[in-house]
Image 1 (spheres, rainbow, N blue to C red):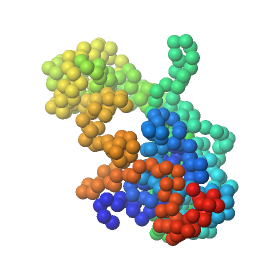
Image 2 (image 1 turned 90 degrees about the horizontal axis):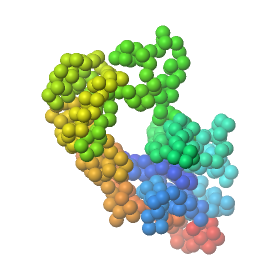
Image 3 (image 1 turned 60 degrees about the vertical axis):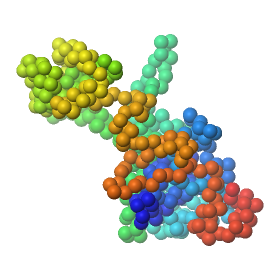
Image 4 (image 1 turned 180 degrees about the horizontal axis):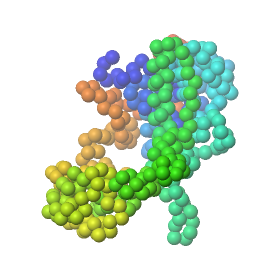
Length: 410
């Protein structure tokens, strides 16, 4: 393998997907897997979904389907079903990124495909999964976050409830966990010849991603004698997760001359470094705090002093202070301003629009001494039909032409 082929060169995935769940294979394609996106003749309507629309295609499509080959097949035809099976015969995995059972209705479910390829890995990824009372509910990505307790309702000045701005969890975590599971199953299949049938619910992933808060609430159902708060809080229970940060003082956001920074001096050593660094050793002497995990919760006097102190310097000056005086301080960016951050520019340089039709972030895993391959742009519907049929199944131009004339492929 050459350095530009990717870690997954030689891994082949056949994908049937609609909309965002297709990102389960984006991670694999970014690492060099050969991902064949099988689309209906009319194509996946992801190209028209959400915003922004970049020169006629949605950003969702341009990102999620980058690095993939598109082949258009009418799976309602016996010939189309056979082509699909022939593709699966030489593949490592099949991904059903739509309602579970959609492929089975075409005679292409796990039980059908394992007969074609005894070591195939079959992964279905959907909103609520294959079981439970919600399994047949129609839904979109935000549903998995509201279900998982990630998005508290907000109200405008007129009393109307609305969806507040938030980071989507389920539609990203589900595919990431799915990709991990697929790779694990492929490793086993190559070692033992054993197939696997797995399923991922994006709702499950959204909940699992927030395990700390959910498990904390569960732990607090036990009596105080068994489950307490932290020693630095005199064992008083704080609200789970980041909700317990609200009254923090030595671990808190502060306004600066030109923005905000996050102050994280919860360890006594860092707090001492800060107090001495700003020329206020008396702050440390008066409130030394516990050695670890002490946020000086509820200390309003200290909170006021720190609020005034942080307004005396710019955010950049505070970051430099943190480096000089060994005090944890971090920028507070927004999705818009993060691109101006030097750390972002160093670690996540944009893939140029000339390559993917719009600027996109690179895959975040870095190889030391190797380059991660740059993905190809997201395909048009059936863009690679001829090439895939020739490369993988050995079809000649005449056979492809006959299939196209019969509306089996597009």
